[in-house]
Image (cartoon, rainbow, N blue to C red; front, top):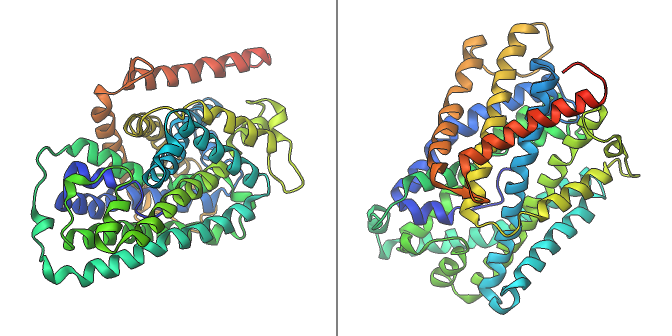
Length: 417
């Protein structure tokens, strides 16, 4: 749910160059990934409920803010989920450009959405087992690429790593890096479908934080030592790197891995997001039909509804998707850190098998780094436009519409707002 190998890092390298990209990938986990993983580890082990972060915020801040958390997360998912079919199409076009030209690319993206919806209807264990298998397959070409690149290192030295690119875009590189390291809270929404969540969530969060950083840094370091030009990297460029360093056979393997990445990321994230309408429906904040389960325990109507919504954003560009995704996701993440602190104060006796270290001060400090990075992402998105509107204005309107929808739902049910 956080990473599917190095795919998606190409723009970090192309925008920042090797040295800056490696520094970003090494530093941001300590400011962004680790605090978020610690927060999720505590909250998921203390409140292992279906719906995850939505349930945490509702319990800490009340139904209004719980609804806003769900609203912002689902709105962010519209943009986030469109990225992975776009990656699938980008890599497919590397070997068969005629297959993805014009409307054909949209059909392939829709096929990814449909295939993952059918996969999700088979249950959480099928999705989880499939994600592990797909990750191993897509990483295999990079093991070869890293090994051969390091073997060729002696002919190039470290000169390429130190060469700056002509027109660096540091703000863009930071935004793409944040996107590559986000999503730690997504696993929380399926807590009731996880064995021993009190023990397994903290272990999964901290172990994954280290694993993701390694799978990002090693491939970039290796191709830099092999002498590849950073300025040539953009979405899909791992194919060219594999062809230059090893040959056409590995390039084809990387293309197939990129396509697997699109499916492998989309599939578990679909599982995560579709549990939010389910949890909201149980609280009478979404249609009751979303609580219907199939024989595998999957909220099947929620899966089909979300798949249709995500299909509407498939034509946005990669960079624009990341910008608006970060703004909306960032707002929801801040609410989760607020919930962490509020519950520490309001429910000190709540059993917490895992805690963010440092007491109350540690809980407060955990949210500072992510909040500052979210503020930077919002600043970097100030010039982006979505549906003809400034990205920040668009995000503000999404937030305000959440408050309007919540008010309408409460009034329609004859409840106090």
